[in-house]
Length: 109
Image (tube, rainbow, N blue to C red; front, top):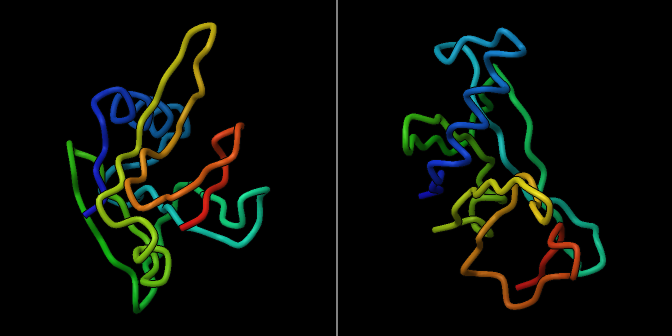
């Protein structure tokens, strides 16, 4: 399962409204790619096309889709959102990560 915090839900819904994306047709796609200073980096975007091996979840009213390989890195991860002077924007609270970089954009297992 991939979880979505209340703050992330509010921001995702707001961005979808700004882009005029229907929540029936579009979803949040999250993935993990090689890169970053710790070896793996998160990627997040809106999408409306599912692929054959996609894993689909819905939490807190937000539909989240990820590919099977990325899901292995994202099990029980929570998408968070923080704003303010020290806010990070969107970030992932990943209990599987053994190490992350100072910027919080990459991690390793």
